[in-house]
Image 1 (cartoon, rainbow, N blue to C red):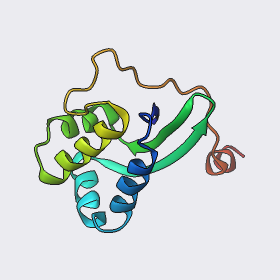
Image 2: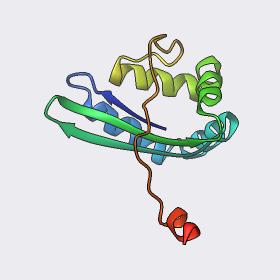
Image 3: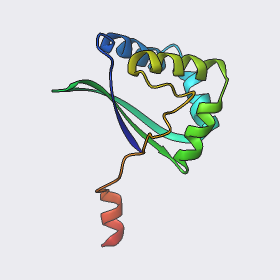
Image 4: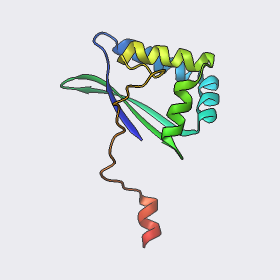
Length: 119
C-alpha cells in the first residue's frame, strides 16, 4: 500500500521532527503499535513536488483495510500522539478517515525475487 499526502504549508519541518521522533525516541512504541495492527513494513518519504511537499508512505500488511480500521479506532497513547502529529502536518484525521478516501490503485509491480521464481 502506498499513499501520497500533501503536507500543509509551513509544516515540512514538523514532518521532519515527527519522523525523527519515530526513528529515535519513540521507536519501541512505534514497533509495538505496528505489530498490534498488523503492519509488517512501513517506509516514509518526503517528496518535494511542483505542487508542494508531500508525505509518501509505503506499508505492507496482510490486510491493510483492517490495519487502518484498528489504528483509527485505537485510543493507545502512542497511536493518539501519532494521529495528532499526522493531522497537524497533513490535515488528515486518522481517527476519522475521510469516507471518500480511496486507496491507491496498483498499476505495476516488480520483484527480482518474483522474476527468479518464474524462471
